[in-house]
Image (cartoon, rainbow, N blue to C red):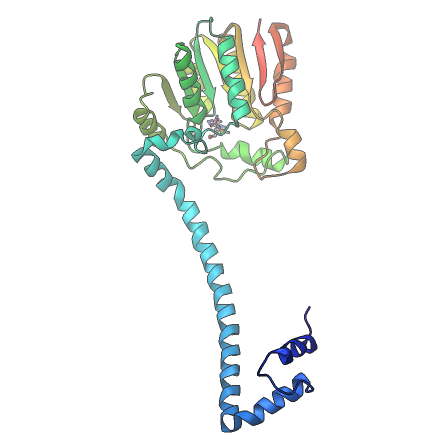
Length: 306
Ligand SMILES: C[S@@+](CC[C@H](N)C(=O)[O-])C[C@H]1O[C@@H](n2cnc3c(N)ncnc32)[C@H](O)[C@@H]1O
């Protein structure tokens, strides 16, 4: 910190400033006398200036508080605006940071493509349980298109978030802290419009509703690849058990979030899903005799049927 004495020493070196032998207090006293009748007016100006600065400071603090509130409200409203903007300008889906709105990280997507390639010669459809905004389903379709191996993808989701009873149960067990409104920023209408815009309405078939109500009819056909990405343990078990009998021999079922327990220990976000690993482990243990191969890739856990 620079002291007053130092400032005074520097100031007295300036040409035109007199009285190098005076201290700062003495110089101020002299200035006060020199100002004569104007001294009180100047002092008043300094005081008013100081009050204005303090007042502006607190005003700004209050405003930044309400700005924060406004921004939070805007963010809450944003999904609807975002949906509208993306549908109006679908080229935005291709941006790197949008990635068709997939929730899967790049590494998970690459693993999903790899698994799709592994079942390329098998008959059957692809089912995704938990599709949210269809980001991964769309990217997978694009991958298959590039390979010339497009096949139907059934994308199942409530398109309105988790089952409340299941979410409450997992939260009570400390398996997740996901909020009531997790994954509610999508809708069936939105994904249908999105597919139409991206000209994928003949390839990806969104199926709206809870898996318990929708999956049995969808899994009535042969399945080559199933991607189960529904975050909660009971739903995961239900999807895996329902699809398994219809999975082609050599077909693959993949699960996301198996590693969430590792991430969960560090608790980096409110959306970790610790129910996934035990549910996958239990499914594998119960079906071992029909499993040809299983294991954790870097992000996805795969189970290949005999
Ligand atoms: C992680 S998100 C899916 C993300 C998507 N696979 C992707 O990669 O972009 C999980 C989704 O599972 C859905 N979900 C969870 N349990 C469900 C249930 N019992 N029935 C229907 N949908 C469910 C949620 O609505 C949510 O959209």
